[in-house]
Image (cartoon, rainbow, N blue to C red):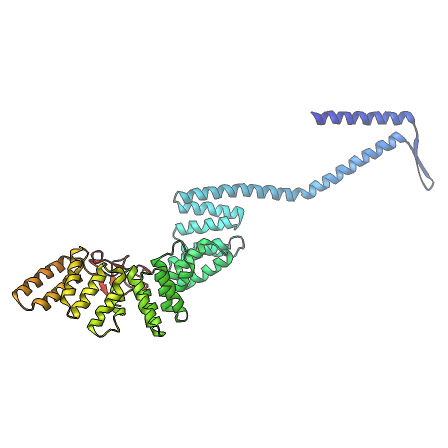
Length: 428
């Protein structure tokens, strides 16, 4: 409405100006050679206005004519975009509904309308994978990985397929490319850590595993496994393993062996004593007493090892056994009976009682009765602790980074005998 009012005002002013000029009179003269043209002022001005309007109309028509193909292309692209977006939406619905054939049909329409864009290629790959056509899916992922705006998505899809096929060299290469394409991506770091575990690259697994997920025993196990693979940094890695889990016997033994080899036997014994204080283990006692050949000296060594964790079942057992070996049957009986009375004795304690009564009572009726009693108790007692894979239940003669029976890394732990019943023993 306001524009119409302004237009009427402008028209009124134009008419007023034309009448005013006509009343004033005047002639516009144009002389070309011998030709003379004279027109009134108002008519000349009217001719200029008409000429301007005609020229403007011609130029506007020419511009519109020249832009007609572009406008047609824009309309066609907009229609394709609208139809393509609708096809993408229908493809997403088909994928969510679990109908890959319908999804593939809709995605084909979308690619015809939109071209090979990142989202159409990604949907193509997912639909082909859902349909069981992995080769076609990987082809779409490869096309996606060749685009700067979709490289990471393509590499991620190819990496997932390589891991499913257990093609570890290809998976490691793709993981490195994905990290280069998207530095700092948490998903890539997690996948590289998983690949390191799969390929038993313990040092890389230790470096890549998230600190919040890699604590205590798991970090110690990876660090010790890495030390077994890398002799150049083994010393630092062994110390790292012991620091992560001071009660991890294999780490304490590795550190103590290195200290003894470097000419520090006292430091080695201190390391074993510190580990025994946290988590007594029979291998620690064996290493601590290995240099003692005299039976009485072994008793004193056992007392030195166990004095800070005196009432632990392993402490009582090692004290009882060393005392019995030294002929100190009274001392041995005191330790072993205290262990049996505590209710935490396993089969080893009862078998040690058999040996002790055999020494004290000999081949007598009382000795045979005592032996039968302790053997029955041993049969009903829990089995001795052992290294056991918590994934498959297989028991091992010593700790290893990976269970060769089921292939699971980092799951071999020192467990009580009751939990290990039914496992097969693997000698490594």
